[in-house]
Image (cartoon, rainbow, N blue to C red):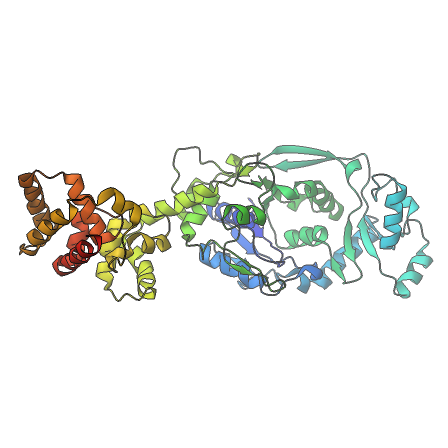
Length: 504
């Protein structure tokens, strides 16, 4: 019987969710949906010192915004909980004891000072088969001494007993067969008596086993841990339920060297978090993709192609299309440059894809916040003319505020270039022509104005550039007849009068 696909995303609530973590969750989501499986949301909060209030809700809100839905876990329910590791203490203790009873682990009492002294004494010190005999642990102390130390309240850790000379094979769905010699692995700490909680390594294995996780898809930074996790599965006798591993490529700095960090975003002006983050400890506010004006679909599309290639020229994918096209074997082994400019390009493409009405609904509050009362129909008309010029909805106002607010000044550089000595005369004639039109539609204006320019033998560019300066205040905007038809006769004439008077 084929095993049901079950994957998990298991962040730690230590702060804002990095965009690399979002991509990991996205790939897990795509893999689960493609195989008709389950996506589990687990919180790994065994390191109580790093817990940050509000981080868990921030992570959940990020995925709600992005449209990445989980099937079970924290806040989603399920029959394999609890899904917060801090609520599973008693479960882990049972498995710690099982390793101790089977001589797969041992208790160590070494203090931080003793460990530091040993590091100073032995170059490149590693707590392993070569050095464990020099340390204070249950392998060098008698059972009576061990019990006495525990009874006296001495803090201890439980270390995994790694045997040397073993070849550990990790089959990775992206990287193929990875072989590691156990000699380079240290006896990792699995449990700490100080807080009665396991470390990531033990909790991760126990949870994946009990929650029947079939595939572990995670970042490349966890690849060094994979051999240890394989050995732990063996130590418990769980080889038959060991998940398949897939270690995703790192997200690299835009320049390509080094792992992407928040500093890179601050330096180059792009977000590295899905939502704006207010650090409760420092008060620092970090930008987010949502608040920066990105569409969630654009962020998902952008991230999906960072480290994965569909094998075609297609770049625009809906979430459903990504589910259909995703093939984890097509993920790159090499790191992916974080081309934030491509993210902006995606947002522009999604603006073009969306209807004028949908963009207008987003733009209308911005218009209102600038003190303009305007109908949604007229806002939609402006969007129709201008949306192809922006990458973000918020960019529309500075680009096309002239549709709603008459210019009170005229760009000096444009005026110097476009306002000729004969412009006042031409604009006065144009004003009279437009005032006499009964039909002020775009088509009627265009026919009349072109006929007038031709009869007067004026240069088309001279007239149109000066007219644009009068109505807009600078040299930007769509076609002049689009602008004047939108403004209407009364407003067009009023702006012409004001400009002729001001520019002279």
